[in-house]
Image (cartoon, rainbow, N blue to C red; front, side):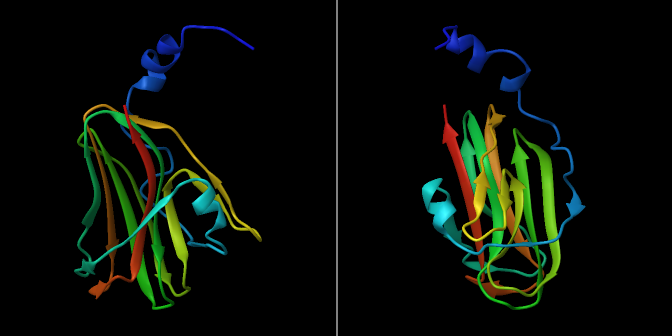
Length: 159
């Protein structure tokens, strides 16, 4: 067992500052197919249906005021309709990641903006630790006008 000043480890240094960009963001990515919700359940990933979406217009799914840590964020399709899907992350007023998949036609395809997901028999979710000081927005978008055809999937904690 190691000992140390946990407040220094968590509250100081560059890891406590929010990013201005996430490397690899703003790129078109291939969608991953989620084979099982098992890993989402084990990692307490919250899944919210989109509600009504207007084509090519971002909808805010998560809005947090205050400090915290973002562990996972993605957009996931509910059905096999052909569409483009997007997930945008804004931290402390700065857009740090925009992820997209163009012409997704598979049910449960998803694009991960923060964290990771490996497509295997049971799926493996990797949680990240992206700090925010004043605010967090998770937004999703579809190329279609539709209702409850996308999920916003996320884990964050406030501090």
